[in-house]
Length: 212
Image 1 (cartoon, rainbow, N blue to C red):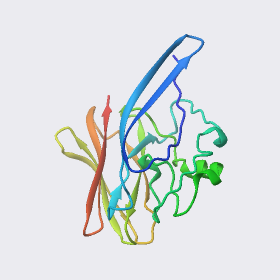
Image 2 (image 1 turned 45 degrees about the vertical axis):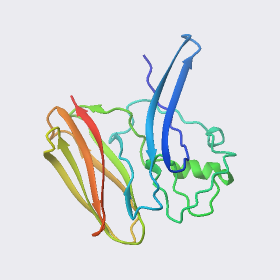
Image 3 (image 1 turned 180 degrees about the horizontal axis):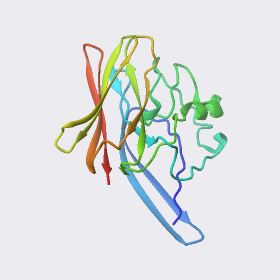
């Protein structure tokens, strides 16, 4: 068996979507497909929004990662213009942070570089205690307000097993990249939960993992 992953950036307006991916091996004469539902929030309307959490291995990708040149990434010719004056979180499925009036088709190579996450994400959701994870998410806010947040790992009974407090200054970019060691956790199902507040608004995002 050969396992590898191919990163691809999609720029989408807010809404509900179903992502469908299919692959065919000419050598084996076989193919397969997978569907996934995803939601793209409207980051320009809510006063405080967290992107979904992206997970990766702290020691680097555990499978080969195949990249295509930016000219073949599907960004060229898209002509997509983001109308928001606020950067849109890349981790939210929109692909790249773009300021008002920037057209994707103008500089596809630059867009592809800007869209890349700080590490290769992992498709795995089952890990071992020997693994350490990198977690990445972004905070979008209406104005220059300080934000405090707590990153927690909770078990199946909602008991907090690990907690990290972090604060963002008013002029600090809302990019959060943290390392989470799994060694202190016993085998079982957990949720990585982020709760953020600007003093008036509170928002939460979470994702599930299993430790074998």
